Length: 488
Image (cartoon, rainbow, N blue to C red; front, side, top):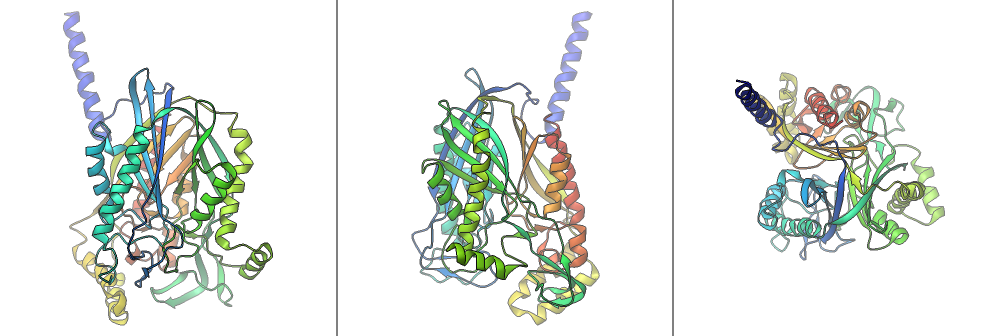
């Protein structure tokens, strides 16, 4: 009888375990809070096309016929092992692109299933640096001449390069170590200007305007907070030689976003500065933290800032690159003394259904009006009209979230241009010592504004800029925090 009861209890526990994995959405074992030996591999590849290319990030067409600097992807493969048995895995790839769209994620995933048949592609994280001078991925957005590479062709080319980088990183895994650091660098600034009274703009009337003039008499304040932290992960070989670093900052890469030359923007200068200081064989993997309302553009004190650059004899991009490298320099002596060759590494992933932002009757009527007044943006506004007429049929917007524990550090992804406040909510509620939030990862996400921003209006907060609004933003925060804290 005792053995029968034991068998029944074991069966019930087994069924509950399977059910819990189904709910989590991740076919993984329960979190292992024991440290295991770390293995690390790196690779970088060019994703620069050999033809003229349309550039993403503006409303008008720009064709790059000459390159200012190359766009690349950098891959990091990490694994922990218990003896010869793999415990946990991840491949992270940072790409000099505006977003991950146009089927790029699916193309890369399909290729990796062939090239790395044993790797769980749900544990692949692709993130964009959000350069506005990177190649277009979506067809139909711009009128692209025949002599330029077309988006479908570029996606296939980039997917091959990215999957090759991921494969090379995975196949080059060797025993290594990890340490983390936290520094400061003034790079990003809140870009939403608020006025005392509503003002008209090309995106309707509201009290907030992206990049609004601050020298007006009705200027009130800058809408949101800024985060100048630089969150860092360093990886080392067995001889404690630096192999590469992840650098996470709350700022998209768009200092020279209006150019017509292909460019990685300020990460090109940052990488050059870091290679000069730490060696050309050190890999640099950039990530953008929650920064939907942030950019490197100066909103005030511009004249003095530019005068200082003249005195230094450098560009704004070089200034930003130096600031990032200086932040690394400041912490580097300390992170060398805290290298862990065995870490607790857990990797969860889940598809989270977020409520779609509802289109109000007022927003619908305004979209109809703007569609007639702005023929160059008519399709943009008609999309809102279609959403209003069909919004009950698609109440949810599914997004994939990856959450990792790497020792004392947590890392959480989302596909949005996520307003800074959401990142702060995640970080302050996280049980990790240091929490990385990685936006523009694993899919095409629109801006995700706060309720305060929605009330102010303006591009990035109006319904035309969003699939998910502040209600869904808080759902994303709560679910992300739940996944992070389940690791501790």
